[in-house]
Image (tube, rainbow, N blue to C red; front, side, top):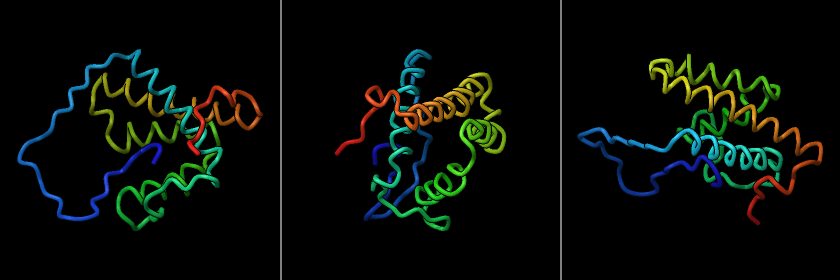
Length: 143
């Protein structure tokens, strides 16, 4: 997949770790903002070319494994909300429903950047693409 690559166990058996894994990423906000900008380009391309993209390993299914369920929710719930309103839904789901507010100030920054800015920026780029502008600056899909 181009984005949101799920880990799918094709053979063998999953197990449990005895201890937590700490992913202590120390990249600064400038790096994060650049990454969000690049991801929003890719997301806008994927959404604008949805019918042409056969990127999904698993078919979307509400009752399937987690990656298939997430794809189903993106396709059948999130994508049906109006552009520029979806960012509010995304923020409320991650910050309130999924208890992101428990992450403190750093969590607030993360959820605002992801829920509002990334999703809003993606919708703005989709709008731009639908008007025939900015196509050359947006990340092209691989052939």
